[in-house]
Structures are given as structure tokens and as C-alpha cells.
Image (cartoon, rainbow, N blue to C red):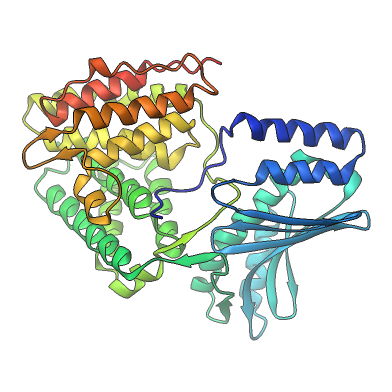
Length: 420
């Protein structure tokens, strides 16, 4: 199974919301073990199979998957305890001890600990003081920090070693090869296109090219480890409110993308593996966040089309999808509609992977109209379980050119009604 993007636990289906409500009710009734079992059902993704637990009387042992990490824990003897290994060390170092102390100050529920030459993150609480809401945010903090900090700490301190990717699944070599080839192609193509543009007159267009490439790599290639962290850092630095001019930010981001393009193939392949997760990194965002992003960017499309830069116009439409998929925990219909858009604009990649049907022939400019419409109808039908007012009028789509299709497709996304 080929996966795209990052795991999101936002906007869970009604059955999972019912599990959450049951868990909270049972906790208030002090039926703690039954409450926690309902909570594990809420956390569990039925497709991903990311959570396992076993109850024996007044004890529950559990395991959560988060990226490359396995979180182990138990609920027994009046306490909830869980931990995840981050790294191992041969000898102590003042430098990494100081780093751990500094990071402890930024954590609300859990803390770094050391045991048997292992660095781990640990959470513990008395059962009576551990309602579902505290467990959710506490375990999310622990799991996401452990998954991210292992690579960063090992990269920064030579005396630390990785504990391995216990929760990772290796990709087939053919999939890795395809992903690497497109990774390199997209980076080289973006850098080459930017070199053709005046960095002052086209600072906006260059920003779209750079950011979309970073977000596209994150979603379509779906790297983990150091490579994922480097893509995140680019986005943070670009949007940092530091009063630096965008021309300067573009230069820095271009340098960062060039470093990715120059990265040894073996180093890239090391970060291509499949993981399962329990907690999403991006915070839930309503459809209004999508509408606001469209409002702030769509007015720029017309200029690029009118001035004969259709390739940048297409990149801008892609950016609307890739930015949302990177930054937000989206409602499922939005996420699936954006995935469909990227499938169409990157049909060669999906074809190479053998993922899905042929939706668009770029050489001939031809669309598989009925297949696209049926996929949209299926997305909306699935979404109607939670959002009965959700409608997408496929009759309004134009298939005479890629630009026309993207314009009308995005216009329909703007009109989606998520009232429940």
C-alpha cells in the first residue's frame, strides 16, 4: 500500500466521537478501566492499526505507534505510566544533558528521563488525576516529541546513537527508486525555473515555486527522519515574523532546496520508509481556513495567466493544496479533494507508482472526465455521513485545459458547505 502525506487524527468519524464521549462519561463515574478501554478505541485507527492493548482485571498494558517510535505503557496499581525511547549513549555529556534539561522546560505533561544508558520520554500520573483529555494531550506530547527528537539529538551529539526505527516499515526498492527520481527531478526543475526569473520582480512567484516544492515533497514523497525535519524548517523560517525581506527568504530557501538536491542518494533513501501514527502533528482546521487561504492567494492567478506564465499559475493552484495538507488537520473531504488535485497535476508520478487510474494525459491535455467526476461524487458521499449539506456540482467543471479545470475545481471547493 502506497501512502501519502502525514497521518491526521482530526475530524474523526462519528463512531470514534462516541467512543470519546463514552470514555469521558465512564471516567466521571469512576469506572476507570472501562473508560480507558473506550479511550483506546477512540485512539485506534481501524485502517492503520496503530494501537494495541490488553486488559487483565485491573491492569491494562498498551502500545501506541508514532512514526518510528513505539510507546509502551501500563495502567495498574492506581497509576498510568508510559514511555518511549529516544536515544542510547555510551557516556554522559554535559552538552546533551543541558539540552534535555532545556527541553524539559518546554513540556507540559511529560519529561526526559535516563535509564540503563537510554534517554527516554516518560509520562506518569495517578489514575484519578488522568482523565481522557489529559491522557490525549500528554501522550501526544510524549509520542510526537520522541518521534521528532531522536533524529535531531543523534545528528547533534556524536555520543548518542539511534534506538532504531522500531515502528517503521521498509518500502520496496522499486518504490524508493521511483520516489528518489521524482524527488530529484522536482528539485532540479524548480531551481532551474527560479534561475530564469528576476528575483526582485518575481519574488512572489518564486515563493510559490519554492514553498510548493517543499510541501509537495512532504506530501507525495512522504519522507521521515532528517529529511522531513529539513522540510519543516524551511516552512518555519519562511513564515517566521522576523521582518526579513521575502527576496532574502527566497534566497535562503533556494539554498536549502539546493542542499536537498545535492544530498547523497543513500541519505535520501534512508529517510524513505512507511510509518504508522496515533497522533497528527497538524492542528485541526475548519473548512474556513481553506477558504481564507484561497481568498489570500487566488487573486494572483490572473496576473500569471494574463502575462503568459501558466506554469506558475498551475504551481499556485498546487500550492493551495500542498500548503493545506502540510499545515492543517483537514476535514476528510477537503484532504481527499486536494489529493485528487495533486493526482491530476502529477499524473506521471502516480502512474510510475502504479497508484490509481489515469486521470489526466498531460501530453494530449485530455482528462478522464467521468472517472474524475465519479471520484468526486464518492468523496462527497462519504463526507455526507458527518456533513449532510456537503455538495460538489461536477457539472460546473471545465475540462478544456488544465488551468480551466483547476479554476473551476477550486471554485467548487470554495462553495462546500460543512454545516452539520
